[in-house]
Image 1 (tube, one colour):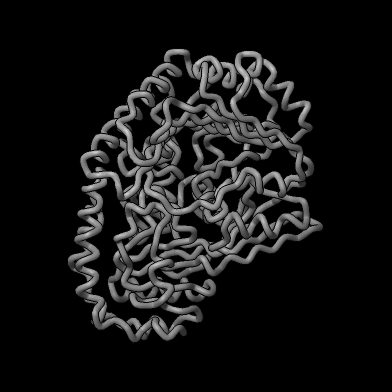
Image 2 (cartoon, rainbow, N blue to C red):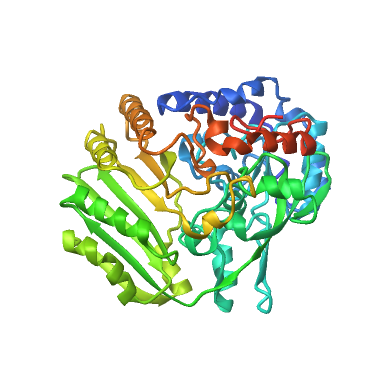
Length: 499
């Protein structure tokens, strides 16, 4: 037990009230929806009145309280606009028994809870003013070199998968951000540059273990608790329980060609040529296209980033029609072993202030759609950082699974598109309000060219009709699973699946 865990609660009750007021005020100032879902916090027991020592004694891992040297870092989410919402305690679970102890204690003492793995919820839904059940210490990854089966703890992050899979030259569909938790990635579907060749992250999942509200720990697979296994593959995290392990079938990897190119001239023509190439490309290509308006830059910049499971000559042949339209300002194309290639493609995922709004598209974007994207970016009001529109190329093996075979309903899409706004505390409330209005108009205008469906892992507190946008025709079945496994609706947040 760490020395700061239980003995520094004397000043917490007044601090918590200040944090609640600050968090709500910050939400309004940032032009985001208020944290009204935390309004019930006024009836929470005072921290000093809660039996925290009882919880600490029941756990193998440490229980952190405000004042601990680690508390602030553990409480901070990736989306910094929600960082002022702080828990009363953070349970750093060492294993499944700790998760069960936390669930018993929180329900017995009527303390709201949230599970956190990577803390990358775009909407701040891995924050709470109650008990944070932090499984990030449960991050071991074991790979069986003979079978290719990888077993991950519930707190494993992409970086842990990278390290464990590299010696075996094997991989799963993983994200680019090293610090993203695999739990959040897989439960919402899971996108990455491997998805067209090998399916979504959830398509490679063969089993998981989950602790329910009543404390039971269940194994889930195609043959065991199959209805829950269906639901967790695409329903998003935090809906049914707390996952303590995941089992994946990995695939072998070899030499890859990675690339990054950018253009600042003839962007509309280059965009159209890139889209034509990408939609006809083999499944071995994984690519993201971005168009960015950046603070202080004179115009827009279009860039592509990705990988090809093949030689450099094959990539250059695919890109030849694009390069004939206009040569890039900057270009890097390299052949590398797979895991060296990921070092080129990956980023750390430093916490930031951002709001991303997504839409799935089917087929090619029209010339009018491209013009709308560029016109909206040129009309960006401006922050101290940037605004970006992008698409992630889909198709391929993703569509080998039908929309009803897993909870991830968005099969058949050609791309995930999104508009993203970034800022810093240096941007005034007025500036942020104008930018949020701009982002909402941009998002609404793009529906005509894309669809009403949105990516549940880019969870968006501003999204209207979010349940249909995230789950489509699979929603009634998801609600039935929710009623069966969490009838008391313990695991809930503003955009959770209702009972």
